Length: 279
Image (cartoon, rainbow, N blue to C red; front, side, top):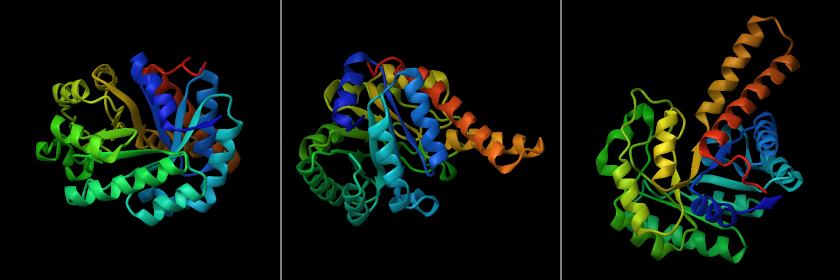
């Protein structure tokens, strides 16, 4: 069933678990995520990000995502992640996405505030939810995760959430997008301090590559939404390598890839504590 962030994250925050957001650039990944969520009776967030559009254009993938969410027997949010431009965010809304993240975290803070506030207003007028980011979750390949000057402060989080009216807030506590060069050092105390001051559900970006204990710690400290993409890609790639080495044909390679991605999604859902929370 198609829904938005407000419905599922409020329950997650109250219940002390997190809902996984899994980006899907093609229907293989989409199938893997939806089937995994249904088998585990878990709410789930599917989506794509602006930086991923060269690998799965919105107009191509959106109809499949919306249709799959509507058919699903569990709550499914269709979320446009890290929208970097107003135009792309509006395109996603017009295509039926039920949630939008405008990411102005690399902009000047006043520009981020202004643009996020406008996106939130439009999303709410259309019945969609909206996510923003304060602080900046950078790229693992650039070593951004360890730059504490990019971390979110509790004061910034409270101010930004109040001024913009976001339904969920992504915060920077030491994670980064992509494959980590070294083990990330997460500032869990900072996360707890933000959670203590802010009622808005918190989002952890850059989840791929974190340890199970990292996930448990961040969820225990107040994270209600966890974004994962790279780990799904790595699982699919490894499955394809072994399938090709085994001499399988194209369709059999695809089946093995989809099964591997599904298994990784299921593992994450169980780790996040959202299994069985759809009912």
